[in-house]
Image (cartoon, rainbow, N blue to C red):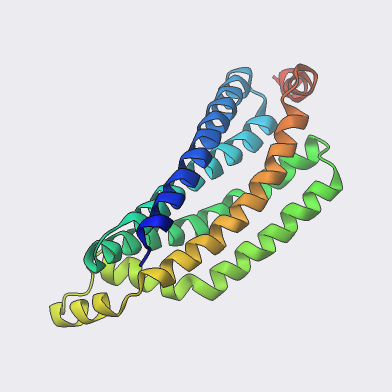
Length: 209
């Protein structure tokens, strides 16, 4: 599937991305905890989505890297069917996380309209991904990964017909959408992580209390 030179290059690239992701995870987690402790509801909502996406991106990166490094068709197929489960669940959950509560939070925090427009554009891409790949991923999730097919011969035939590259290509497509979304969320994070904005998010709730 991938020759040794490409495996070594992919491993080096993955290490660099992992370092950057670990730093981002630590920073966002710290601020999310602070926002939660201070009851800064809207900032907590934004940082919660940001941390969720970073963790999801981390899992997808590990799956894709393992798939690239895997030796043997059986091993590659095993990894691919597990990655398909994550893609199915994530594609559904991310769209929900970007729903009403998140939209209310970004409006309340006065996030610039151009950022909101770009998030809307990525959301359209996520909806298109779900519409195009839902059945493909659902079949792998239910039949192959969850072993819900009790006809063992059919299961083996379906397993042998699964092409790991088909799953990887969808993972790359989804990861690209996540990257675009994270770029916009990082901009929001930078706009909302200063003490004045946090205080402004706390005060209305404190007055109601």
